[in-house]
Length: 564
Ligand SMILES: Nc1nc2c(ncn2[C@@H]2O[C@H](COP(=O)(O)OP(=O)(O)OP(=O)(O)O)[C@@H](O)[C@H]2O)c(=O)[nH]1
Image 1 (cartoon, rainbow, N blue to C red):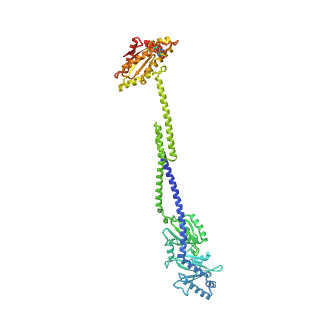
Image 2 (image 1 turned 90 degrees about the horizontal axis):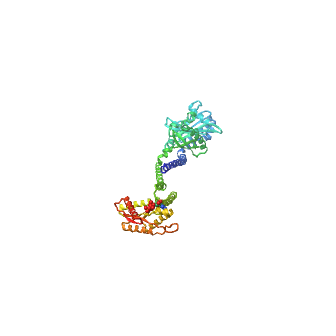
Image 3 (image 1 turned 180 degrees about the vertical axis):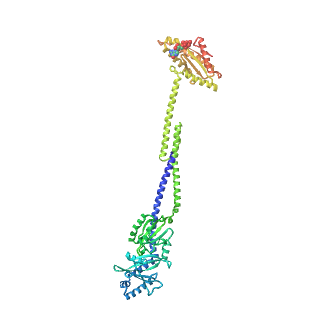
């Protein structure tokens, strides 16, 4: 895989991981912010309810406690048959009845079970004794349960079906020292309370009230309310625990309740699942009425995911932009220089002789790499061209060697053949004329025979030297073989050939360099024949014409020059 897709893949994976991490982190932060906000909300809610909505109940409860603390009432309860005490007590009861919001009261005495009651309509004036409670009557079970539980105060919600209202019964124990001598209290219409506290919460926020056993006393959903808590068996009760879907959350709640109970005003929070929906719940204890309030926040309603849509879109766009910028930067600073480098390597491999052009002003490692490569390519090319130059020189030297006669230093037959064909081509192509002079030493065999082979060689060398002296730099001379020499002259002048041929014969004849054993010059002559080439001549003809002229010169008695 190339670098580009690899980097793209790697970046995408990294960005996705970072994105997921940031997403989880933002969720955590949002949740903790929500929790913080929720706790404040709970505290505010409690204060509000205490000062506004719970106040009437608290007032009634306080009044009911005072009712139970009444000395007059207690004195009569100790001696129920004392008519004077009873009259005083009934007056006291009437006073409290006028003070209670419901303008009703009840007093039930433990020992006799006698139940006294009067209502707002003063319906039972003079007949306050209503009936006697009996432990075996299910309708009277509340009375015995309250005494059994030995809790100073008990609030009990019950619908009053004939009146069409929900009533909160406030029951307070009447004590004489450690002894319980009766239960007194009043009722309160809860309809308004429910309307204010439970039904008027914001969307996504709901609350309910439950007692120390978890029995639900007030809830927006009346089917959840555990009416007549006192008299019900534990198994019959509708509790807040039953609403929870997960046992672990039930345990958490049960651990939390005593904590908030011992720290009134403190809000305990936890996550709960009710009807498969997750809520952030705040639980507080209201000591004045011995109830707990639970406020449930539906985070999905309060903070729906759609709130984050713009954030998601911005994050996605940022990621795409980051990918794009990264890709552009990667391309500009790494991939493109690398592609150029690869091209340059290809060019060098394919034999290019110039240093490939690369951007030289890049900073950083890639820039350095490009510069190093260019320097390396330059020095490699220099070394290569030096090597090629040397090879060329060697080749030329070898070429020269193969075309040179080692004894005389003139061209050999091969060298002259090449020059001949070049000049012949020029003659054909451009009409540049040339002439040939063919030379052959006379009786050379007898020189060898009489004076020795070395002397013969010396004669050949001397002849070559005399020929070279007579030629212009652009003429060519060769030892054609044995004692034969061939001269190629660029000219269209037969006279020039004649003069040269004559002059060479004379110069050889006059030479003094070739010596015998006694250092005396030996006589040396040569014969020469020439031919001036014409454009329509074939090369073989040119050669044979010169050869024939030489033959003629030999025939004429040697030491002679002849033109064809
Ligand atoms: N010393 C020496 N002799 C050579 C060399 N090459 C050829 N020869 C001799 O040159 C002689 C050439 O003789 P020919 O060309 O046959 O005849 P010639 O004696 O020159 O007689 P004409 O040409 O008829 O005058 C032979 O004896 C060869 O052996 C060489 O490199 N050195």
